[in-house]
Length: 173
Image (tube, rainbow, N blue to C red; front, side):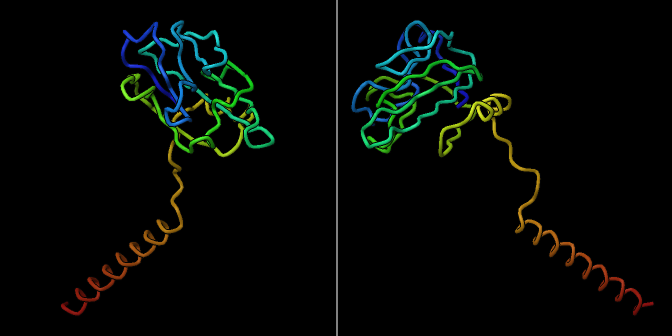
């Protein structure tokens, strides 16, 4: 996710980025009052995360071996490892719902998202580096098969129309 907090007055306050418990408790991914990325309750990373600057965050969660077991959570800011811990806080199976920037019904962290991607599985260090190198996904320049078929039909229709016009001109002459 590439995001920035919009309100500079929010520096020095807790700002929730991601909640997996459907706001059932305060656990989640935050920027803490010291402007560090933190999984709360847990621990934070010593990384300056001030409002107004876009930052690229990659969060990976490797589920525990059994339901309810602790998950291995790692977070990376701008491609660098920021934190790693064992916790059940980021287990999406608890609610199946993700909330962004909403702490409870009345606390919002005003933010902008430039890119948001979800992957099924834990990312490798090489994949995280690749995402950080170009965090905003770009559409493929190669047309899909249906597009190719439409282009070929279009060129064929133009060719048929051109031949008919040439045939009509010859018969008039």
